[in-house]
Image 1 (cartoon, rainbow, N blue to C red):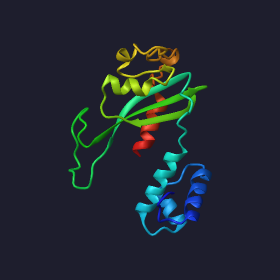
Image 2 (spheres, one colour):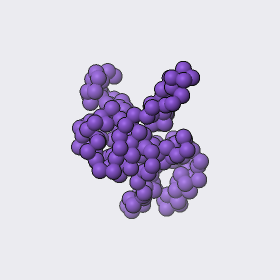
Image 3 (cartoon, rainbow, N blue to C red):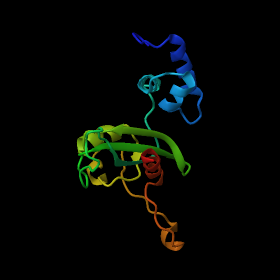
Length: 179
């Protein structure tokens, strides 16, 4: 709030709206609700409040954790719409995600953008999780102490003819994020 041109009442109203909306609130919704004339002000206000709401001493994910990576389009208006192919970083932002699985349902979530898909980048993100459910680079992650990476095997897979769905919760998170 320091050195902000927005009135203090706007900050408090924005904090109240962000904290009480059950599904969160977008910058466009905040702009409309607070009557702000500029979208940029609403976006920066949301970003600063979201950053302030993260607890730096939050507990790490525990139990069974699904982790995987994806890429999100990341280009400015002048860039051509086509990015690099495959795992190229051109026009894409690499993102790691982890979902805590509790009673066969999703729990807490962590998302982080990373510089690249190197083992060092992935290790720093994974180091706070207790157990991995799967990751295509699981062999390289096996060296982390306290981690048992692997891919689950479903007992119902062959018996009932159902396909094996690997990492369903983190893939749903990525699907919703991309939409």
